[in-house]
Every structure is written in C-alpha cells, then in structure tokens.
Length: 582
Image (cartoon, rainbow, N blue to C red; front, side, top):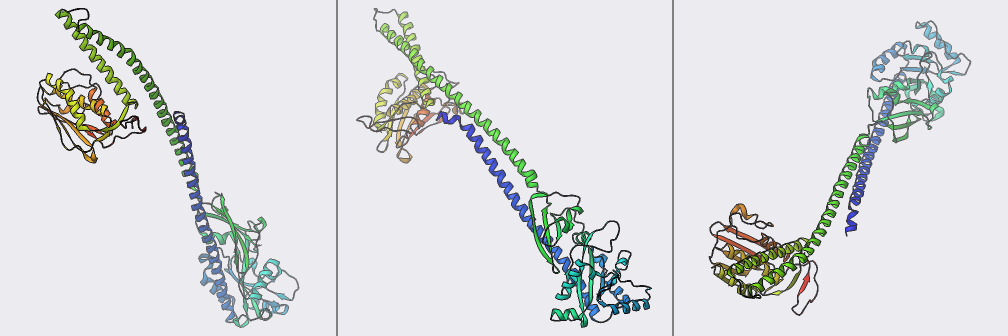
C-alpha cells in the first residue's frame, strides 16, 4: 500500500492532464461544430442572396420585354422607361438595360435610315461583315460615356454571347452568358463580366415550339454586368462577412473561369482552412460554381482552447505539487511514527523493568527485609515508592496513548454483563473511596441482556472516572448508575458533588497532559484522554457535564456490539474475539 501511495502524485498528474486534454478537446470540438454550423448558415445565406438578386435582374428584363411586346418602342420611350427604373441606384452592379434587334441585311439598311430620320447622323453596325442576320444593339440606357461604345455592336458575332442568346431564343427564358470582357471597358482596368438576355417575340407570346420561337424572334432585351460591381452591390458595405466566396463561370473552379473573389473587396483573407466548401447554382440557365471559405473569427480555437489548456496545465502542476507534498509529509509522519513506536518499545523495556525493580525493592525494605526501619528511613522509602509508582503510571499511560494513536491497542471482545462488571469494580474502588471519606453508591437499572465489548477496557475507563471522582469529590457522595441506552446499548454515568469544572477548562480536559488549573491533586493528565479514546475504540463515546460548585457527571455510552475492522473466530472458551482498531 505504501509503494502504491508513492505513485499517487504521478497518477494525479496524469489524471489531471487527461482531464485537461479531454476538456480542451471537447471545447475544440464544440467550437468546430459551432463554426461549421455558422459557416453552413452563411453559405446558405450567400447563395440565397446571389440567387435572389439575379432573379430580380431577370424580372427587370422580363418587364422590359413586355414593353416591346406592346408595340414599337422609340428611343425616347425606352429612355423614359429606363430612367423610371433608376437601375444604377436601385440595383448596383447592373451597367444598363438595352435592346438588341434582329435584322436581315435589308432590315439593317431600313433601321439605319430610320435612325438618321430620328436625328442620329450615323448608325454603324459592327463588326462590319456580311451575314444573313444581324443583332445590333440599338438601345442601351443610361446613354453615358461608358455605354455609348456598345451601340451598334452585334453581340451575335461573339461566340460566348451568341450561345446565351440562342439559349434564350430557344427556351423563351432568361439566359446568362459565360465570362466575357464588356465592350464598355475597352481601355484601362477591365473587369470580367457577363450579360443576361431575355427574348422578345412578335405579339408578346412565347411560341410553343423551338422552330416557331426562332421564326417569331424580334430581338433581346439585355443587361451587361461587371462581376465585381454586381457582387459588391449584392453584399453592400459588409466589411467583416462570415464567409469569403469565389464565383466561377461553369462547373469547374479554375482561375480562368473566375468571375469574382469577395476577399479582394474586404481587405484581405482570414481563411480558416478547415472551413471551406463549394456548391453549384443555376442562374438563368448558366451554371456557376461558388467556392466558400470561412472568414469568421474562430475565437474559441484562437483564445478559449489555449487558455483552457494553459489553465489545466497550471492546475495539474499545482495538484501534483500539493499531492507530492502530502505524500512526502505522510511518509515523514510514518517514519516519525515508526521512530516513536521504537522509542516507546525501548522505553517500555528500559523504564518499566528498572521501575518495577525499584518498587519491588522498596516494598521489601518497608517489609523489614533488613530489619526494622527508623521512622525517618521509612518515611523516605515511602516517598521513593510513591514517586516510583507515579512514574510507572505515567509510563503505562503514555504507552497506552501511543498504542491507541498507532491503532495497535489490543481489544478482546466478549459478552459482558455490565451490572456484574460494575459490582466487581465497586469492590475495587470502595477502599479508595473510604480513604477519601467518600461514599460510593451503585445503581443498576434495566441494562438489557449485556453488550459485546472488551471488559478490561471498560474497567479501565470506569476506574479512571471513579479515581477522578474520589480525588475531586471533596469527600462527598459519588453515584455510579447503569441504564439502558439507545440501540440496546448501555449508559454508565459517574456523578460526584465536588467543586466542578470551570467552563473555560471544560473543553480542554480531554487533551493530553492537561490538568485543571484551579486544583492540583497529582496525576499525569492522560487519564481522561485515554478514557475517551478507548471509548471511541469500543464504538462508544465519553461525555461530561459539569457545574462549578455542584460537581460533574461523566457519561460512558457503549454500543450493543463494539465494531472491529478485523475479527478472529473463537479465541477461547469464553467466545472472545480479538481485533484491531476500527
């Protein structure tokens, strides 16, 4: 057991470190789960905002297509319609709204003539090449410096735009182009962009078949978009978003397909490498791939988890130091106890043996082994005998106390008839009481059927109480009373009518080597401490009640059966059981 105890500090340290590791891991796991949930929520919100805004742009184009379905629209009417939409302010990111008209070669000449009649000096359709059909941009509002270069551009000649226009024509639905460089940005910084088209059919109705749709096509209303402006407009002035995202044109997240990187607009990246993902969305018939990365400040992982780990390490070290100190102190106490036990054993042999010899030799002298003694010699030997007996009593008390503290006191349990034991003890104490002019009365009421205890230790306790009663009783009557106590136990009380014990000394009378300051009648100061501890060994208790000038009452409570930690079967004919301290 002692060897195992030496490992206690290491076990405490290991357990504390394990607890710290577990707690830190749980905090990190909780933080990761919360961060993941927050990330996924932000991803859904971002997807929804992009989809909602692009649906809004589709609705704008759908409304514009209705304008052309109602009949011919002049440039003035279209400009008024676009001004009413106020797209630059209400829908940031959209560069304008325009109309691309379907023309044959002959129709192109008629259109140019019509526009010249309306005040425009020239209307070049470009690129300038012969083809069966033309789709020049005839209107684009607002008509500013940026949009002016796009007037007359035949978007059907550029493959990426043409693919989106054909998809819109054949489906009758909005269609977004792939990644392009807008003609509105010919010089300087050029953003990537895309366009959205909505078909316009004759009579404003979408024909049922693809062939009929192709035949009935009048043109397209469209809007050009600069990618960064669009997404900056969608997310406004949000400077610390929870996610950063990239938008790629098509199903592949390749650099050449990049439309927008939100992290370039929020002052850099705080990428959290374990929080990323991607998803695809369909915007007006075109697939976009969105790549997401967490930008949220993961303070749990950055601050809380390290702080908890550091706190756990400090606590673990403190517990280790305290436990080690406790173990070392316990070992030191055990070594001290072993030294004291050896000392008491040596004292038992070295002191009791010569003391017994002195007492015996003094007794022989008093009995006249060398002839009659003179009075003065007899008085001196009696004093020597009294001192030797007092010293032997002190040695015996110290040895008893040390055995009790070490848990080595010998206890022999047997069935004890307490009234009979008191009668026998009464015979022993009577001469002592008579010498003190005290009258001792024994009163035994219903004491039950006896108790299982050690009669020798009970005798020792009661004898000590009676000895104190005769010593401090001032020659007044002493009463010993036996009654039944709770739990079929026995209560033995010793009452004197002496001077009593002052309140300030009452709580100290069970301490070792303590005697009443007001009365000095000899003794070792160990009788009551030993008696109380013996009572506790037997599973009982010793209490006192006293009043100055009225005497004291000591009460010994004995249980029905004294508890023992270890018991041995029949140790003799009397059914005794021996054991150690509980």
